[in-house]
Length: 110
Image (cartoon, rainbow, N blue to C red; front, side, top):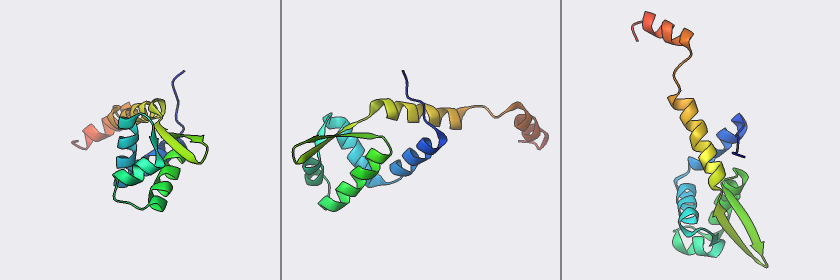
């Protein structure tokens, strides 16, 4: 069953994606399939605590899934959530305006 995002979940994801460092971490996790926190620290110019903070935000936004193995944590992209976000973004931004607003816009010359 496809993931359906609430308005709050949509906004949480949008806020998480607004940070370029988080986007890079997300891109690397998507490219690797599953990546350890230590691998992410090595691949970006950020300290471990900053990477951990960004990972926490991405997990809270449901964009990453965390798997623990002993003392290590591994992360992978939640593709179902990313697809739901993209679909919700498409619906919010590319959907035609309601008929009433369209008529008002035309009346104003827009």
